[in-house]
Length: 211
Length: 211
Image 1 (cartoon, helix red, strand yellow):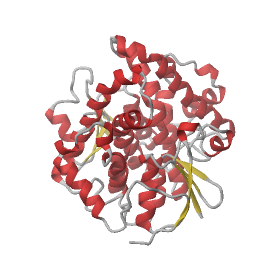
Image 2: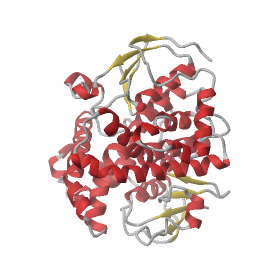
Image 3: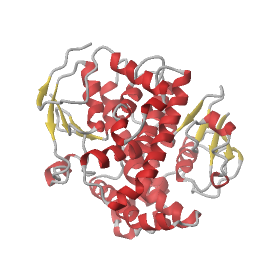
Image 4: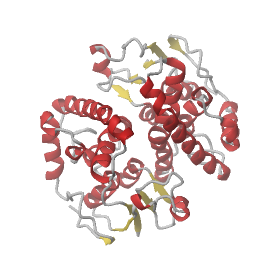
């Protein structure tokens, strides 16, 4: 059975949880406490040298890191990953956008505000995080004025990747009401059959029903 | 003919340039001056709302952004992108690593040191950039002690993506001599038939010879 090393607060962990729910794929979920340093133990580093969750462990023990690479692997052959090469590349474009221009601002601001005692250096960087996050939301808003989804005519892994931290952007101090097309897209993702919320995520075997 | 909107100082732009050289694929190269704001004009934003190079424009006018998504698209069907789904996902894992855990430290430190007048805020962040960049190089060093390449048994787009800024990491103040396996891998990439250096990159039609 697939095993997912995960943290219940992580949007990056939520990405594979949400896709696995849509795929109706059973897996074992292992909670890893980031704040207690559990991603820095020799055992965890043997699964991902980069010391980050999520990590997907396959039945043969092969470990795959990076949330968006995990999405790409899991979605192969499903309706969440187009087969056309250009459509695939466009989904990947949005997933790289998410990791470079969106997550480092929106997810990091949320993490600082919600989960840690902010240092003065972090506090000083918050305006830059706000600016970068709002720039990313503006890019998304522009795209969604022309189309309902990011990777094509239906929901793909690009939407899963972008949904994870956008739907909790308010926890990072972002006003999603300023982006009505983004707000409507969040509702579309939530209305897809098989949708599961970010929390609570239980430990042990998760066996979703295929939508 | 393919058209690449590019900047000659950019490692992200160098990625498709290097892959196109290996593929023997002709293209038109358009230099975009980032420092003069040419990625923020309405015309450029119509090609990439996110206002960044590189952008690959296909013959039908479709534009694809994000260097690593461009690599994935161009490499389809070639020896630089494995066909096995797990091998593809592992290549993508390293490419997402590159954009999240490598480029924001190594490329940004290089950019600040080499190409702009550093602000005091940037100068204060340099130690953090050093630390993050060295962490990324340490992850690469660990991987390369066990294998010659990142995406499999031969050079793939994962190597192209990681090579772009690693081979100029010294320009960001990183000591590559501290990472002998990385240094040897850099030499392997350079010795691949068809390799081209980062500069000089001329404008107009580039017609490489297939290696």
